[in-house]
Image (cartoon, rainbow, N blue to C red):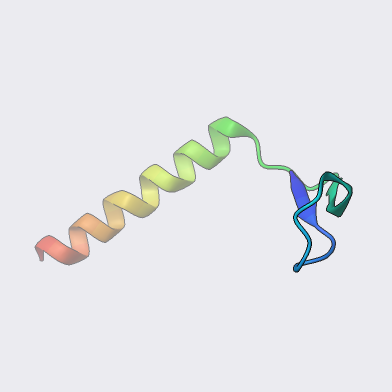
Length: 44
């Protein structure tokens, strides 16, 4: 995951890699659960 260190700057030097990262499978499952919940609320 990349984090901008200076919000007003868009140069490559403003981007740092961090140890914060989500596993792609976990993120996909979480988004699917969120989407199903949202659809359930909208259709109810």
